[in-house]
Image (cartoon, rainbow, N blue to C red; front, side, top):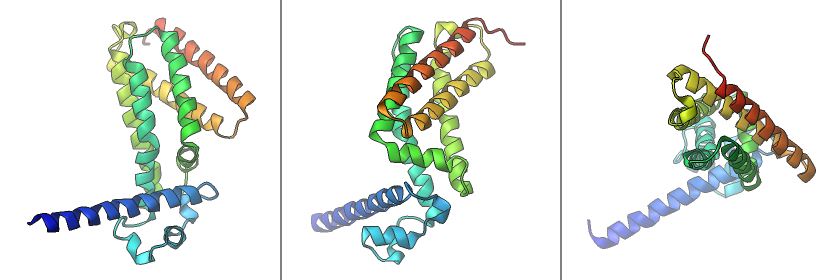
Length: 210
């Protein structure tokens, strides 16, 4: 394969990725006003300016596009929370940083958070399952970080995973609450989230498996 051919293939691949991202962005924008189950691919391709047939070069169907949006929506939150948990800090600092990270994520990616909140119990099974799988993976990552902490000494793997699930569920719930809140309401939500997480942390120190 000569350099000219490689260059041509590179341009085509870049254009394909650009179109794929445009389809994801268009769908996410449209989903601010409706659910995935009611969104048609013709609506999406119309926004992007491509023929409906072009959609199938990137996704088998709208469900597959929705799964790609799940990965995009939760991926950056994973990275942020992992970074917070990786830091050697006191429990209260970790809680404060975690709530700040969630608030920042909502400010930066409100459409992604709204999509996950709506579709977590929505009508497209593949997307529900993808969200559940991503949150489970998130829980596993948090459990790994918690297990390395001194406060988890003597805990069973099952109990650490249960605790991680509490943290993840609470952070997702907090993210959803931030969505439609005013600045004043967000401060109240953040304060409540911190106090509730501290309560969980306090219970952790005194937990004894039944």
